[in-house]
Length: 465
Ligand SMILES: *Cc1c(COP(=O)(O)O)cnc(C)c1O
Image (tube, helix red, strand yellow):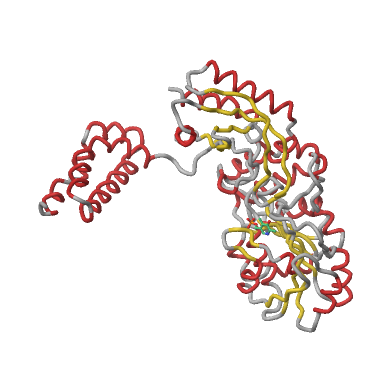
């Protein structure tokens, strides 16, 4: 084998590469910084290959290096994160940013991001204001809570909730509610993190109020009820209601907290799905504080919302952790805009995309599928397309057992495997993300908003080129 030094010597210099005509063109489009960065990265990767590669690999890579460079720069220069078309049919796809935002929500954020804003400034007095003043009244109006506070996400809300309790004391939780949300977020671990002792009560399938009663002691700091939002236990089960817990809490002078997960603010039965406890109901039944996500079924930005008794909310607001968990101006604008929509339920269903998607009828979805399908038949993407009935999931750890019936455009190709077709769709300027079932690629219509249909058509046209 030749000395590796000889190969190192053959690596073109960054300056030389930047002068290459095919690269200079890209500098005009992407800017010098992006291109230089990409070229440096590729040169480093080549050096690494020469350090470890076989002779054959080194020869091949050196030979192809300049030719492949423009393509690699383009890939590295792509803006990320980027918009995607979610044709998976999963409404709250955590990997795809959970709840998409509607016009009124986006507009509110755009205004605030366009210059300075009144984040902590009161226009009435001209004096310092509080961040929560932008959303607290709205949240209280919609949920019936006395006070409310927003933090970075629901995991942060849980930390803050437990963080306000006296360290080292116990929190009672049913064994049927010791959930894992995903990404290592497990109730027992969060409890440990916050310096509280988890006191498990009852059994996996049955927990009665008497189990809680027996567990209460001078060491008890709170009772926590966790909504098992991402799984269901069925069969021989028994659950303790918030009413029972809150009456026990009142008697013993112990607060009752509830982690609701999704933050449902309206009756889901109006969409033909089974009832989920709403924030309003749980507060009315006597929970002292509830916490929930902003970007699940609520349909707003990533946030954690704490709502309930003033006494507790104010304690959380002045907790040292609050500074680390507080949301930024963009989130606050989006949150306030979302709750403004909820002041009128029908308006919320029209303007909040997640609710609108839930409310889309089979007829509407079929029409959209027919349109996309007929377009594909005329177009030049070499695939067979048909419209099929399908089932959609809510996702995002919400309503795990509910299926919504939907419609999809189903693609198959003699020339391409499903994986190849999926890859082709994924690599479009605006990636189209479908799913594979029965050896076909399914593009679900429920999560493609009507106003996105044109964009989907354009991307499919691009795929056919
Ligand atoms: C999703 C969920 C969380 C975590 O919420 P994030 O906003 O993702 O941090 C916590 N608890 C329950 C019950 C959940 O469903």
